[in-house]
Length: 106
Image (tube, helix red, strand yellow):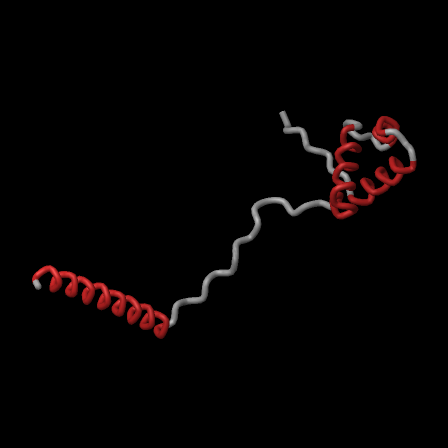
């Protein structure tokens, strides 16, 4: 048994339906005339139209957004800078430790 497909409507069709609804046509009339699955579609489109304007009726991109660009490869210079920073931090820690030990002996 095939999976039922969800009917999609173009932006132009949605726009025409919304314009007709704003002109006074009822949701039920529009659903019958345009063979919509439910008058609720008109209500949902109206809600999106009121919230976001015509852009709210345009199709949204499907799926997961693409990730950011891959990071640049780390250069030798960057590696050496990081190593220098790590060694400076290690030296500062060891000096502080030595000073604390010397204070305890004095």
